[in-house]
Image 1: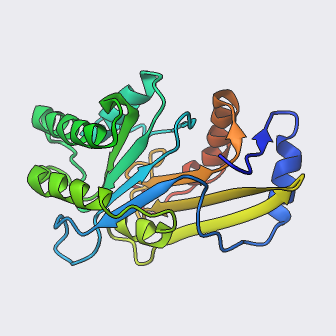
Image 2: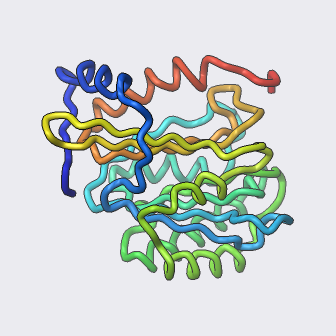
Length: 243
């Protein structure tokens, strides 16, 4: 990727000080990250409800998950795929249906549509991270998911972040997106984050979804330090309705 800045433990504080002091910038893209959305017919409303984001090769991905004792099928598969230690090449997120409490079929459905996506973009199914949000105890309409995936892949973009932030919404009253940029040593560090969730954010994110993307080169070890510290001070430190 072009304009990559390497972030190390010894300079993370300096980077964050410069980053926090910068003004929110209207960034159109994160280098080489492609995304697309569509209304796959999962929602009753005619809003986009399916999102795919494809990463450059050799991207590093770190995640934290809900501590709910009954995780949804996509949570189980996403955690398993991350543990495979294969480089993540894409995430797929659907709203409206959480695929939670769906047992064996729910797991089989996730494996089916992630395998389909993997084949389409020429990677291993374990390199796909699935996420779902919405009502529980309902099965995903797999045919609609497959058709939606096929259509999205025909119209990917580098700048579709606003639609991405809307496609993952459920009961949210507004979309949540942050874009920031700062120049360090002549190189532009870019960060774009999107999130959904207006309730049920405990225990430890519960049904929340949040995704952060950057062109910075950050080691897996440092990523874990940053994300664990960040969620501890933010998402895991607040509750809306006690769920």
